[in-house]
Image (cartoon, rainbow, N blue to C red; front, side, top):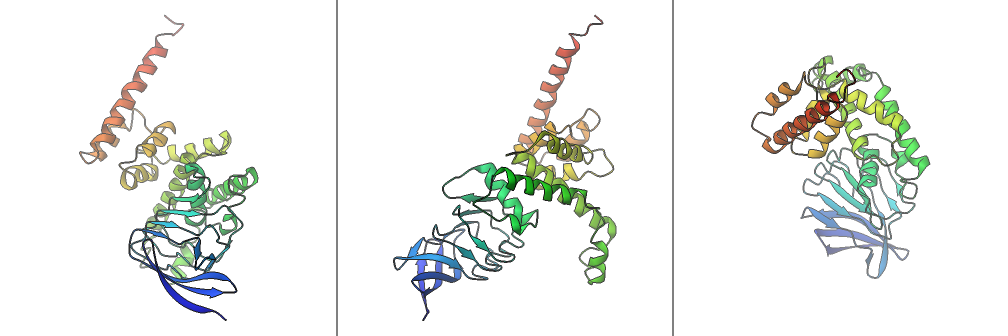
Length: 298
C-alpha cells in the first residue's frame, strides 16, 4: 500500500509516494530557480514523476532529474515558461503527453553522463520546436537514425504552407489571439526561421544539403527582403547573442545593400554586436579586395 510524504530537497520540497519499494514524485514545490529531484529517497530509487508534478512553475530555470528515473507522466513540467535547462539520465525513459508543453524558453536537455552542448540543443528542439514526442528517446539521441528522423521532421515543418492551420484557429474561436492572416503568417515565418537557426547552431550530424536549405531560407528572409523574419529573430529575440549573428552572417544574410539598414535597426541598444558587425564588414571587404587583386585582367 502506498503512502505519501514530504521532504525538503535542493531548490524546494516535494511530495512523494513509496510504492513497491520505489519512489514516485507526486508534486514539487519549487522555491528557487534551480531544483533537483534526488536519485534516492529513504534509500529507495526515485523512478517515477507523476503527471503535472511541476506544472506551471514561474520560478524554475534549471531542473535535475533522478538518475534512477524510468517514467515521466503527462504534462509533468508543462507551462514552466522560464525553464531553460534540464538534466536527465541517458536511458529508456517513458515520456507521457506534453511533458514539456509550452516550455518556450527550454534550450538545452542534457544527459547527465554526456554533457554535449549541441546534442542537448537538438534534444530540446524535439518537444519545444518540432512537436515530435516520438523523438524523446534518450538512448537513441545523437545516433545517425535519430538525427535523420529529426531532420526529416524539420524539413516537413519548413515545407508546410505558412497559411496551414489559420482556418482552424478561426473556426475554433481564436481569432482574438491571431487577429489577421498577416500576423499569423508572420508568426509562422518566424517559427521557421527559429528552426533554421536552432539546427545550424546545433549542427551535430548536419549534412551539407540540409545546411544549404536552412541558410537559403534565412537569406530569403533577411533585412531588405519582402519578409525579414530571420533578422527579427536575431535582433529582437537574440540581440546580445553573437552566435546568432555568426550564423546570420555565414548564411549570407549580411549584404552591401542591407548593411546600413541593419545598423540603423540596431541603433545604440547593442553596441557590442554593432561593433562585431562593423568588424565583420571590414574583414569581409579586405578578403574581397585581396582576391580582386589576383584578377587575371591586371
